[in-house]
Amino acid sequence: MTDNDAREAEPDSHVNFNAPAVLRKWPSLNNQRRTEGTGPYLLLDGTLDDCIREFMAKPDSTRHLYEIQTAPQPPLVTEILLSEHVAELARLREFL
Image 1 (cartoon, helix red, strand yellow):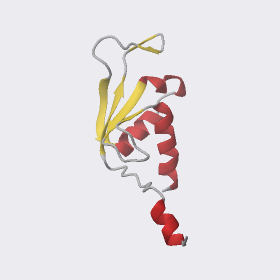
Image 2: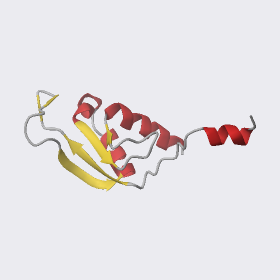
Image 3: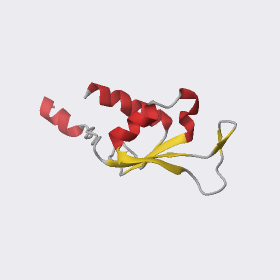
Image 4: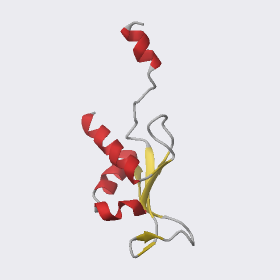
């Protein structure tokens, strides 16, 4: 297997950080999600990069209340990004 073959066999890990995305927050009580009712509400309508930056500015202790919704970019980006995944994408973004 040549180097080119190995690169072609790897999944495309490019992430478009300029893709449209929204940051949403779940209503909460005592720092716990309230899932009854209307669901998460809109905080920011922008790019994936904008949403990641805003998310990462939130205190660690409240990040579980937020999610980012965007178009899927397999294999790294799903339609709904939860706190653990957003933190990983933020680290990836720093290396690009």
